Amino acid sequence: MRIRFFLSAVVLTATVFACNGTSSTDAGTSIAGAWLLKSLNGTDVPAVLSVSGNDTTFLDTELLILPPAGKYSRTTNKVTDSPSIFGSPVTGTSSGTYARKGSGYSFNDDSLGVGTGSLTNGMLTIAFGGQVHVFSLP
Image (cartoon, rainbow, N blue to C red):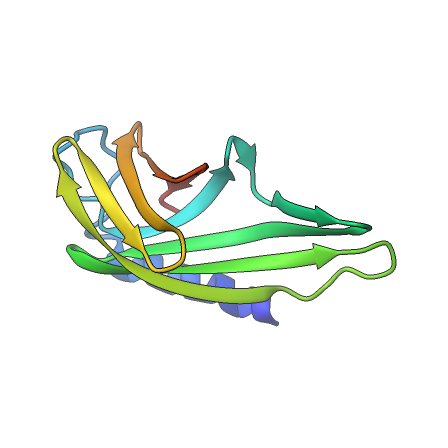
């Protein structure tokens, strides 16, 4: 049920922001839109976040909503798997701000901290400390 709701929200958000999204490699192009996480630190999602004993926590999905300017929102779904059960997704949200910085972008996320981003071949890459998030438009 949660996954169906999340996917519906993704489609709705993508439709709302479709006019503002882009897949251009032009550094001057707006990055406004609804971006879906494709990989984390070079690993396709779902990506392993942590392993503790027999439990493994995965980052299942991440949706980044970038309006034309200023403040953004980020929604993540994490799932913990253990030998006996597969857990329900846990949804988390955060927000932050972004701005143009030279040929790239600066991000300040309330949970990930300060990051830098770039748009290349239609993929938005954002580095927050030791994590590299790669997003694409749906």
